Length: 328
Image (tube, rainbow, N blue to C red; front, side, top):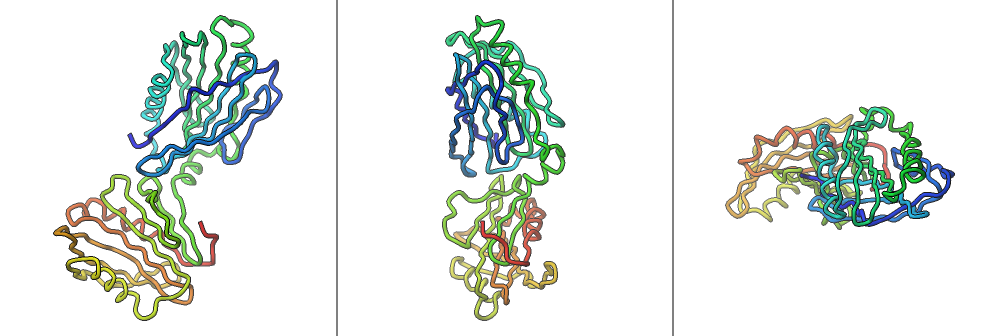
């Protein structure tokens, strides 16, 4: 499972006499009415691909609890992965707070399919109702909890809470949302790289300005983007090969060519580099001119290359040279 998750289910949240606060938050796909303004915090959980970020809003009033959580993952989600994530999330919840699932059924929010779950919590003597839904590449969890003996007001307020749940209009087009969240961009100066975040993730150890390292989801290929506001002195192809020779036992060029990216002609290189008896095939686009200099190189072992070549080329083709963009 690619999506580590911590549901932080120890938080409790509550209800007041009637819904008064219309909840919405920047970049959130859901809106809902709460009994009062909630408290909030953020939690990051490390993973091999980077931090899983959870933003939480919670409310506790009169022994009733409400919780809203938005999980953002370093890897975008591929359609069809949602059921496995729902199953993983429920198992984590049950591990954190053991209980008995008394109901599990499909739940829909606009065009998005999720799950409704009801859990009896014997230790706390409460009933917990949960909705889970994946929108784009984010998981949303909404929960209402009330005393199990309360068959009237608590249950009614939970019903009112979930009935008020709605989809932000900016997320109504599921196809557009999937596209927007799956394709991400690295940008600096006059250069930008649009990449598929379901297949590539940023190396969490990146710290050096102007250097971006990407790793394929299955770790069978890597890539590096280097951006410099100043052009390279001399021939950029020769500079790239010289740098490669400094770190490899041997380097042999397979292809030299030119590649058009928009109206700009870039250099294309394919070369083999042997490092500690392992041969890597490198494929990259390189440019140096008045806009500055950029190097985008992807590589894989010679053994793995045939299976990842198409995705490496797709990544390279995401490189664009254009008007100055905000640095990310």
